[in-house]
Image (cartoon, rainbow, N blue to C red; front, top):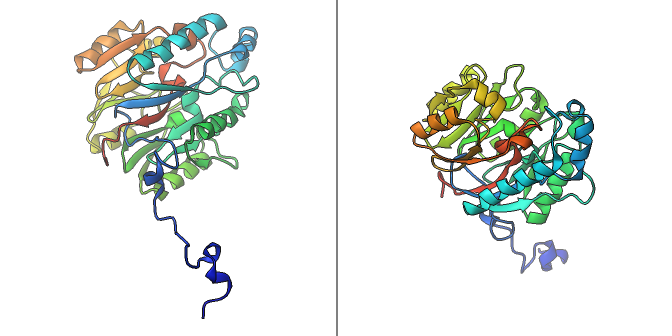
Length: 320
């Protein structure tokens, strides 16, 4: 016999409609359009933070704020504006993280603060005490854009988004090292496995910062790596996934000019830091169209175009 309560829709009675859609199917309706299943599909939208008054503290103590040298805050803003405009000129939608109070000085490195998946974002938990709390403003920006946050790394875990790359809709490469510890990597891996992805784990050598700094993927079959810094097991995973792995020709350009710190705009098309002629010629020799952008002042903060850019959406290239 049906109970009196079950006569009402709220208790599962007549009129109750179960939610029959998966999260991926709700992107673009209940949630904002977002997600990716590769590192090389056509770039559609990004999230940046324009450096502001927080950079004034850096001038007094660059090393204490994880910077390489005292930057010129005004020139940083000019270059960051030019980077945002370069994206717009390529048809990429640019959104901004705009904290209501003064953020920490490394807030501009948006790629570290989240990682995008086929279903939404994983919120990072930066490893350095200097960067603690940056994820709060990233979470706020994602929420305002209507992007689902699938997980916020917690406990004693640390994870930065630049340590994750998607090889296909069902395979991801996840690095552990200075910025992502074992617990953080385990939390992220669990989330990705929950959506059916195979997670390949690797460990970065001492003296490296992120996976992003050692590897960039520029097409369905093209990966560029830093020899001696990208672990052998990661190279093997890439090759098994169908990528040809090429190695940068000039480590000095990669070190001082951030020549590998690029963002892929689409198949064999990248935004890259200007002033790296050897690397640019090497990329072009592989059939890659290069769009150089002057970001030298931003580089004093110990990162460049890839680090500055949180990718929100790419064209799906594997599963439609």
